[in-house]
Image (cartoon, rainbow, N blue to C red; front, side, top):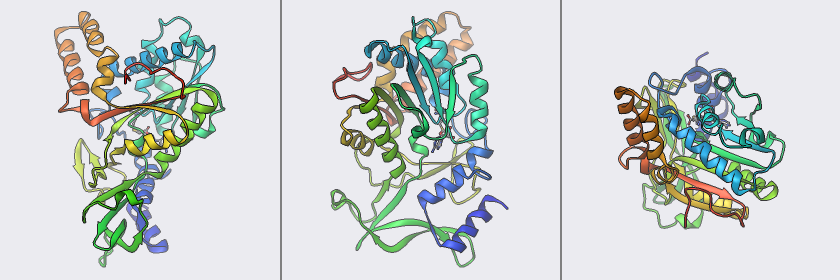
Length: 356
Ligand code: SAH
């Protein structure tokens, strides 16, 4: 059975599905899902993430984590948790970039949170030089203790619900079947109850809500308060509601119809940073940001790192380093659309890159 047949069977048996159910089935179905089947990352994949663009990204995140560890008073044992580590590139660069920081590697245990068995295998290959690594399917499966958590392009992959404002109120967007048995979007006839703060949104506005993201950030923030820790979340998204449909499919670096070639295209939505920040603040944690990816990487010294890499590089490789620097930090590329927040305990001093 193909993924399309599988989804149609679900719809015939149980009725139309929400965008959240659609995303979960298409991305994470253990038998037919996108992460199971496709190699999403890199030039030959569907999209390129920051760690795949340049080793500088993971190295600088490593420096960020090591400086947070120093701020914590260099605990002898700490978990470095990465949510949705893809091919393991960020963590591999992180480890190489921090190996000369006295005591850091002795202290850290790497915890990778990943649902795709195929990607776990890739991550094992990428981290084969480091012995203290373990894998979990869920943040809450990690035994509790002090931790520093990194999530890059993780939250955009979590399933969203989408609502559209009509003259009589908000209606959830669903995926169902047309009379000719094709997948199609339509709005649920049932009105949805939506937070009153969205009352003034114009007709035609779309509102996206990501319950999984909010619940994971709550869990992370509560663990930060309970055991001590810090989290760095980087993703593409917005700080103020945009009321636009950001649900998108990308295949071979191009936008794709999300209802076609199921399981062959990546599905994502922009991250609502305000919702993540609220979830963290409700738990009593201190939230810093939102700052742009450009600000974060510049504060962490990306141009110094680029210059030192260029010293030992051929002129061709030096051009690549400059191109990567530009791609990661320019405002017309990833520099502004990608944003970062940090979550720390209430009394913790601001971590590197995040200044009031
Ligand atoms: N952070 C990586 C990969 C981003 S793609 C990078 O920057 O290159 C999203 C990653 O999250 C993939 O590894 C995917 O398998 C994983 N993922 C998606 N949903 C998940 C979930 N619910 N729990 C854990 N991992 C998940």
